[in-house]
Length: 244
Ligand code: SF4
Picture 1 (cartoon, rainbow, N blue to C red):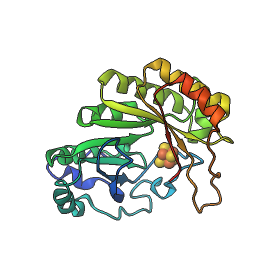
Picture 2 (cartoon, rainbow, N blue to C red; picture 1 turned 90 degrees about the horizontal axis):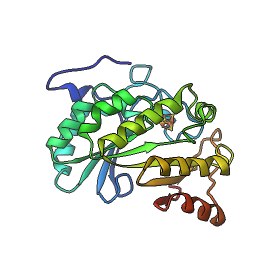
Picture 3 (spheres, rainbow, N blue to C red; picture 1 turned 45 degrees about the horizontal axis):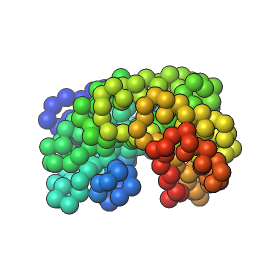
Picture 4 (cartoon, helix red, strand yellow; picture 1 turned 60 degrees about the vertical axis):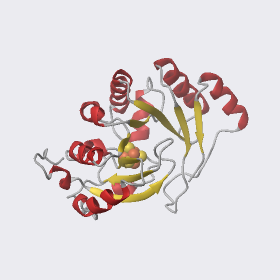
């Protein structure tokens, strides 16, 4: 992991791995762009951005310096509502707070997509964020399943602590669960939904595991109508998101 950076150009150290210049689905109710930050400590089997897993410097060049994005961000601030930091896992990048501050100063609302793997780093940026999408991959009381779905040990405890921090700070948010029948059973999905409802999560989105050309990844699946009825009974504010 890279050392923390300080000073006026701290944001320039952000390891930008990609840019989605326009989206209506990555920040609810806002016209947004997405900055994808390079690097993730987890190895989820259904990861849709495996090219963003390796940390910058581990044989990966950040292809898009933040400094090169700056003029584009300044121009687009007139037409976009929000800038979303996604990944990879953006909270692992020490330059994230500086980049968020800079984007806020340009007038963007700040969105954050995180898997919650570092509660401490999430807590540090929550005062800079207007909306958070927190991945919750499995029931938070099932440590073994979390370990399998994240490829690391201790994932459930980290996500649970991140959820606590998110709920305590009052920042607008949603939790998101990727649905794949061969990785998350009906019972586990139902328990995930019920546990998040009981913790007070206002909005929970179920996302179909997206298709890709990579044969290593599982195929797309989606809960059927009967299953959806059961899940919605568990959490009335359930949101369904179809495959991209
Ligand atoms: S946490 Fe997200 S970016 Fe990291 S491996 Fe899992 S799905 Fe991919």
